[in-house]
Image 1 (cartoon, rainbow, N blue to C red):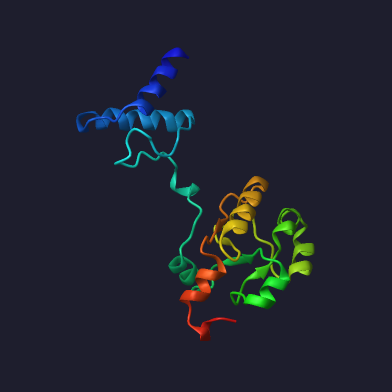
Image 2 (image 1 turned 60 degrees about the horizontal axis):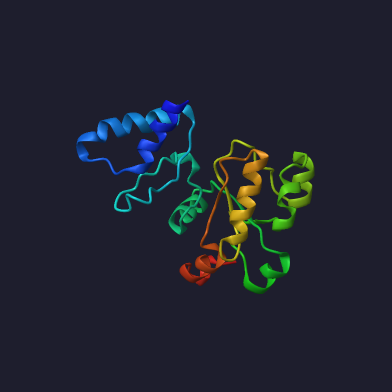
Length: 175
């Protein structure tokens, strides 16, 4: 175990010169297999990204990605704002409104009950097209993290929120 601790410490303490890139790659691969986690960015090596976060854990989607998903009709978009906010500011056309306070209960409902309550098909745990949004991205991240804990690990969120959407989308595309 002590050797393992030294091994992990060696990868996080120093910036490796280019000649040692192969060794660093081997160490990272070992850490990934052993399921050890490290900080995503090394403090000592601020000029290069030493992230070990797998791609499937990247959860933010951009405005361009959201528009493409909407165009392809391949998104289960969930607006976690309160209903009165939708009346005041507007909403993205195909979004289903599930207020943040109701998200954990909604995603543990029976599928028929979910459909009756929200007039939309309940997402499956393996769906990769579940996207949460709110006004500015704070509540949507909280909703995404809540459903990740329930088992919907592929759910993502749109951090720009309705504010970014409304400022970049033509008035004829809003509803």
